[in-house]
Length: 101
Image 1 (tube, rainbow, N blue to C red):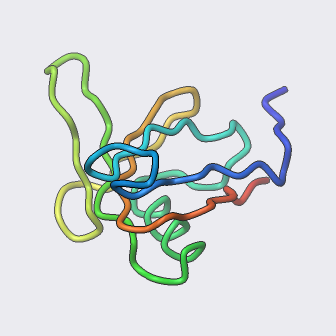
Image 2: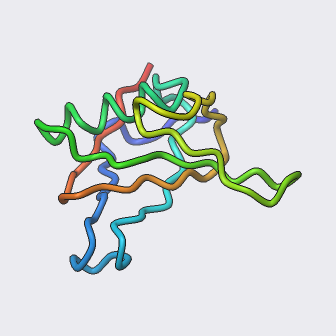
């Protein structure tokens, strides 16, 4: 239960590359992904890119109708929950393969 193809690739697209005008990507992590918070997600995507390409990670807060933002230095590295979508903004194309258990 919750397994996925260990080679699944999540393409993260920058602005102008068939993506949003701002490089925003909405992703949901596989259930067996190892990342547990926004900082780890930024670190893992940046490592896959070979440079710092993540501008921010955001989580929609339904109760307050706002976004929780984390960019690696400001905001809170909020925990990631399986089955939820997150916004990941990047400055260049990254083919991200989540590390898994």
